[in-house]
Image 1 (cartoon, rainbow, N blue to C red):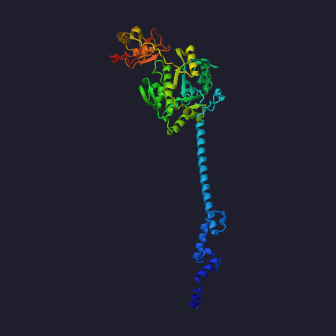
Image 2: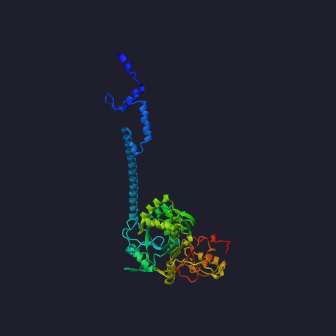
Image 3: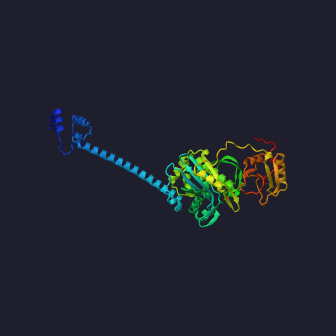
Length: 495
């Protein structure tokens, strides 16, 4: 019976069976047809697939015809996509906020270290100049050793910057300049910083110059070399050989000597360069010229600072500079300095001379220089009709021995007479100083001094008197310990 019954059931047509089974919604066991392997025919599945492909499950008007399991799968995929997009968006927001917060913290840190918390009152009400508008910036340099709270300024340079024309005027003020300091009477100019820092220095220089100071930067030379090293050094054409241990702050005095000529100075040697005054017969005046040369080199080099150098520079500047400018304003200043040509950097020193114990300004000449500064004119005009080059017979020279060696003044006088120069007074210096270097000092005629230099050893230095020496002739030769008769040039070519 069992065999017959099974055989009887198999006689139904396949099509009838498949059509019938395809209409079922369940089985006798209560199972979902979709979960039972034999619950649907191949033809039914193919028809269902064809219907689904036609709808593509992409338009809402066909979704109600799709099986529940496919709609559920579609919803799950949409939820997964939404979760992934949300996670990505959150990650981006977190990254942006994190970077922004980090940048803000870094900016505020730099600003706090850089910006003077007690801004000079004279600057508080000043409106920062608009982009491309000219402004005056006071540069101050001082040596603030650890633990010191009172100190004077060795550098005072008033700079006028015109970003639009790409030109800069730099006017140096002698530190010993005789001035009136409010509340302290007649003093040397650098005393103003000791008495009242920027609050007193700025109005004092404004009074002397008649110029309004818009911004200031005070640089501590004790950390100055960090700034130069962060820049990768500063390229300078050193005009004179330097050997000055007093200007060298290195522990073992390894930066005392600087050779003449073009070279890249690291921080330690750059500090010696801007601090040395014993190198020059005119002391502070020579040092001011060197400082102007240094800042010219820095301005020229600003356009070549790479992005990799910037973080180190920013840190070094923040630790050693105080200013009223924000970091963003400083970047603007640096950007405005880019492209300035060396010929458009004008430098000058307040015309003055030494009248112990002060440097006293020549009021007439100072007024002329300040007028050019205010009117954005070159300090020195090119001379079209230059006077003829001097000849030895037209030059009278005073010769003095600045050492303890006997007879060398007569040696030098004989050499100069043999070359055709007129020699006046020959003797020893009036003071007790011993000169290491031989100097050729002139009052007005630098060309005459340079002609004398051609007939003396090439390590003799030409400097301007500026009232620091008393003698009657145009040229004074002071012989130093480096005087060597064997170094006298034998063949001299003159123009």
